[in-house]
Image 1 (spheres, one colour):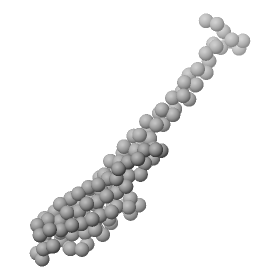
Image 2 (image 1 turned 90 degrees about the vertical axis):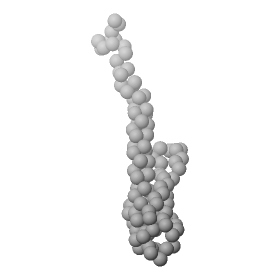
Image 3 (image 1 turned 90 degrees about the horizontal axis):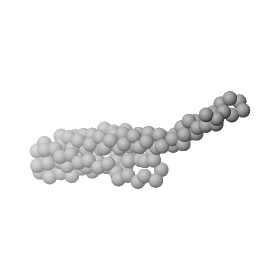
Length: 123
């Protein structure tokens, strides 16, 4: 093995350079994990908003959309639409999924819930 003037080996510092080259890959993998968790969370919140809206609308007509939007964080910007028939109440909640990875376009989270119509007056 060849030694340098100071007594070290000539490949000294190679591990540091390899580590610096690997850091962007590690950061990208971490961001992908965080993004995946965020997508799951937003989909779960959309389902919560839809279920709440359908349940409230079935019991108190006209209050479902507001209740569905209030069931999740206001910063998510949930949009809730309720439709009724004589037998059922259907609520659809849509929430835009924000991306933390540049250039990644994601479809909005959409969830639908159906509850029996408890209103004796019908639609």
